[in-house]
Length: 308
Image (cartoon, rainbow, N blue to C red; front, side, top):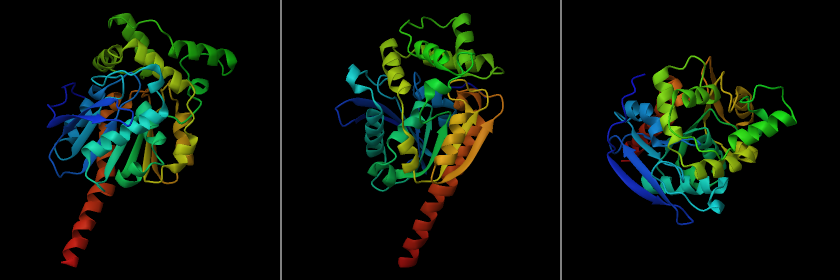
């Protein structure tokens, strides 16, 4: 993977969520092209999707946005962090970037995938989601199933994991030590140094208060009902070396989804799949768009021409 940054966006805009919170949104690629909307995970930003934006924007309209408190989206007070807020924000982004009834591939990594699950039963998802990709994510029991602490499952491991993920200590500057820690916790053992550096810079840029606030939401996560409401073709990707959301989550999602169209377990890859395995993630998004967005557009065009 070349670590060339994403190109300049075709336009930027601000979406306004139901509680008045504003969201930084970027749109890439040609107008009228099949649409893709990408939602990043905890402690990340639009920069996390650079590889996907760069490759897909040549022939897709790609929408990326910063989750509240991340990147260029302002933080909110403590009560403003919740799975409901994730769903509200996604609805605002879809309303600001897609035409009424326009359908797109919606892809989410980690907390971004949880965003899609949280919004699954909402009209905006029914109106706009042609297909979904869930990368390195889970619906519940995130702390209990985490493998960040190398101990047997149980109360002690769960308690220690909760303390680590919710730690209030500042991450500080990116150093060789901090990169080693981040690699252990979030990436596969064979991850290239430049990819580790990219992820470290993104994660360390997340404000401490925002990181901690979202950690409390994730620790109590239960979106099992949302998985069952995700009634569109949905693909799942997981890394076999993912310590944060190990493959047990992906397998549970694949089993519970009403219309799962594939589970890919990537050998040796950790939690940061869009950065660690960008070609695989991009290809899956492109395949979903070709099957469920472009195909639908072609059928609509044919029906219109027949009617004329």
